[in-house]
Image 1 (cartoon, helix red, strand yellow):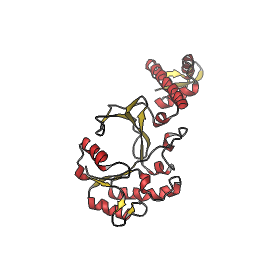
Image 2 (cartoon, rainbow, N blue to C red; image 1 turned 45 degrees about the horizontal axis):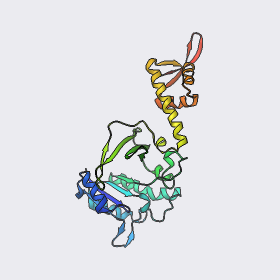
Image 3 (spheres, rainbow, N blue to C red; image 1 turned 30 degrees about the horizontal axis):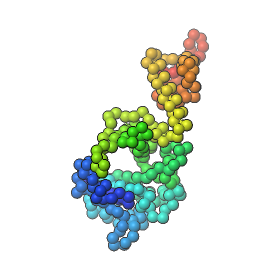
Length: 267
């Protein structure tokens, strides 16, 4: 569809990037790799200082549709990654450049180790990285299958929230092949990154979701009292049940039943 510029300071061109591009049947004539060293200036590329040079490169390459920074933090000079204002100031011109040339800029970063935080706040450095981006995805390994990855949405400003997908990495060492599974996966990014205690809570919510799905297969209008009674018999607490209700998009309203106002849950 167009040309791609890749800034990479981690992966080797010959044994990693080219091999993976060939495996994906990419047109390598449209891929331009940049290690970050500016030949004439003999200094490392800094998006804050060298944006004019970068824009000239985009124009010279022509028909650029995608620019990848892997990782984005390597190309921000001495910007302090934990300072919200500094990060926003560094990234804002990139957003303007993307709009001007109608291209996508993909910034890759790693996760911090704070499992107590929600997934949206798990990127390295300040939340400004995810706040500035219009779309944010998480890639997380499946604990039960080291060859499987989850591709989960974290934030979307340009479309309705998509669902989590899963893909596998197959093929011989050095020549990986990516295969996406059909359909979606009923897991959120928060669930994927949760610690063991939190995962137990998520497991309880999944149980409550299954309970509500089964319940509403029999009847689409049920009193909340009846639902809570049946849930208690299954040892599902009210708080967990309400979380499952929200996840399933179940609504509630008050109705007069036999002369008494009661809450009704309905789909």
